[in-house]
Image (cartoon, rainbow, N blue to C red; front, side, top):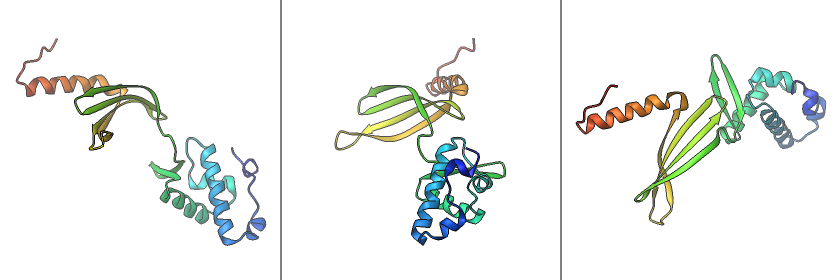
Amino acid sequence: MNSKDELFVLDSEEIKFLSPYEREEYIRNILIELLTAKNNGITIPEAVEITGFNRITIAKHLEHLTSIRKAYKRKRGGSTIYFKNGRLVHPTGYKDVFFEDKKYTFLRLQNDEGEFFYIQENKKDDYDMYKVTGGIIISIEHFQEFLNGLIKFTMESRGEKQNDD
């Protein structure tokens, strides 16, 4: 999606005939369409170029969409990039392990930034339902180093000596 035509954006004269409420909703819907089409996010200048809306209008509506959680933003370098809120990570595998009143869910996750292991701790509540009580995300790239550190810490805390082989 590179041009205003692909979005079917009304021109500024047509937009003027909309009521203030319809105009706000129309602009927000166009921006949601744009965010949906741009999986890798979009900056305000890119949105201005594609839609033809002015910079202040784009910024105002993207901030509104962020405030109501239909979008989120990230700073990268000197730019702010906006994304449609939705599934940011995709699970590619999981396993549940149970200990007494706790459940640990091991998930393998993937997104644009890489692959990760997510370990989620759940505990049974008063209604015998599992509720998330904590979690940790570790890059697959660093997982072996994490495990080695955990094993070393466990052994040291027990007063055991570790083989350095």
